[in-house]
Length: 95
Image 1 (cartoon, rainbow, N blue to C red):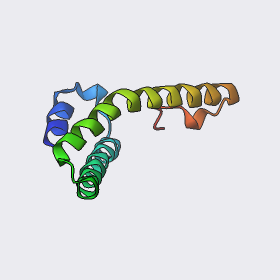
Image 2 (image 1 turned 90 degrees about the vertical axis):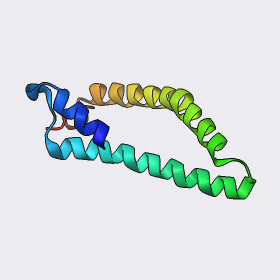
Image 3 (image 1 turned 30 degrees about the horizontal axis):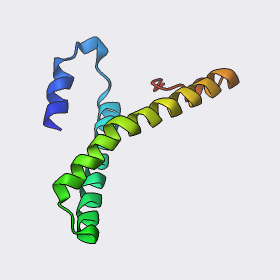
Image 4 (image 1 turned 180 degrees about the horizontal axis):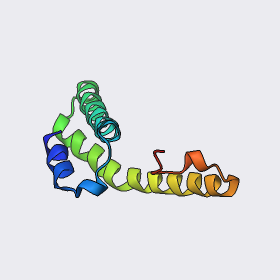
């Protein structure tokens, strides 16, 4: 969270997100990191593999294939939202 705090205070004041939105965005990343950590510990016990190598594999899959799937999903949902004209469901619009 320290890095995110530094980043937040380096942004221009007029571009900063409100504290609540900033906290929700950063906490979702922290929850994801915790999930990956505990999944790696659990999987390393099951497979008797090194947790660090499992973490590297998990990270690489997430950073490549995972990002591609997320990108495709966001584009698909954004197209449906635009087509149906659902203003409240636009990505990045917090209201």
